[in-house]
Image 1: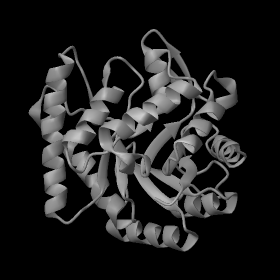
Image 2: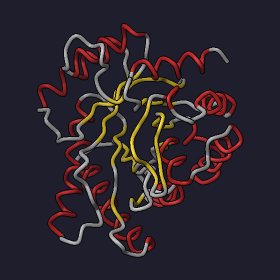
Image 3: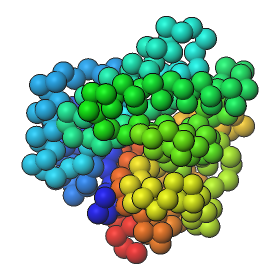
Image 4: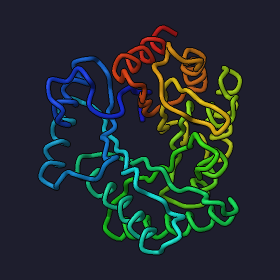
Length: 275
């Protein structure tokens, strides 16, 4: 990607309509550059609508991505639930491809008391199946497992980077707020740079030229993430994060997941532009 773009997780609150098309229009009016289409309650968009959404995004020069449904657990005990989860990832990728997205984000799994290494092997195998099915259809959308905010969830930085290194068609979604909530650390310029360099070391420079990042304020406790907060109501050092992104020359998408969405997306963009 040519530069770092900032946008929202879903339709901006100030959009005159909750439709995806209206959200794209509002993103452009605000001067933001991207939007993550939220399929978190299900992929409720048909092929015709997806193509219309893509046309609006192309005309307004807004980059789109998508978030798959929350109802995904590739480590479910029941095989039918694992297959249903895999198929939700695939369905999201199919629709996202129609509106021009190059990648999708998803929450991969829960440990459910299993050893992390065993869960990793199971998740990897299922994602290899998903990528193979998509590539057989000519679908080139990248699947991005997200760094997660609770200790009960599959999705440490190491797990996400290892999947990205070992499975062609997988790339990371770096959620800096989640990682801060999960570790109680990674909330300073040096730590942000070290994490970005870790990405580069494992995946090459191309990974920093096509990042997908989630940012928000966050409330957390012993178990990790509790809920998202607006940036200025949290302890998250977003100004140090954008400086780290600038200094390593990161390019790609920064998606704001704060409750106030576009206000914090603009705050991040302005902080970045001022450097």
